[in-house]
Image (cartoon, rainbow, N blue to C red; front, side):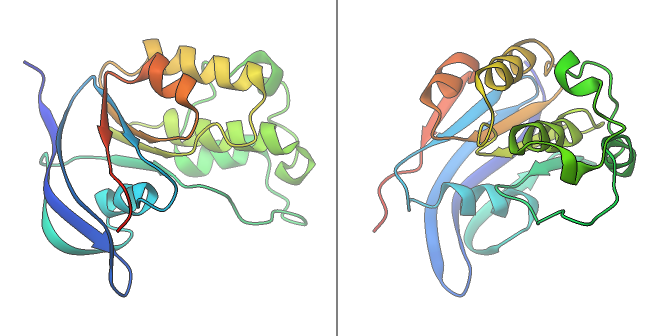
Amino acid sequence: MAEVLLRVTGLVAGYAAPVAGPLGFELRRGEILGLAGPNGAGKSTLLKALWGGVRVFGGQIERAPGLAISHQAQGFDDLRGVPLTGHELLGLTGATADGLPPWLAGRLGERLDRLSGGQLQFLRLWACLAVPADLILLDEPTNNLDRAGVAYLADWLGRAHSGQGIVIVSHDHGLIDDVCTRVVDVGVPS
């Protein structure tokens, strides 16, 4: 049986006050877990709690010793005027360009503020996916992606993650159905 990367028990998380939970699950190496639920249920908040981005009010998060985490957040800062190229972004994150789709690989020398929203989103995703991490956390990864980008992401997730564990929050039910080995319902907001 594959190594347990993450064990979550009764997790309640939020900001000034609790907004999400309780949640419980185990994630093993090679699994892709989807967090499902309606808007406002706290899926993104719970995802942030897994890497320490929000306050934990209750429950427990056990991580495998030495667990390396890569996290892709929703949205991103305005990059107009920032002279950073795709090559430089990947270099800063330690990601490799190996496996990038051809429609983006040829644009790595361009400044990030010259890329379309979908190209920038996929490059940000790649900077998260193509790093040496045990656990990858993805928050709405298909935002701004066109069909080709979503298809490439789904294909990559379906074949390239065997040594990692992945947790995905997405309203893209097709992606969740296609790639997740398991789905946990976060529930209805109170």
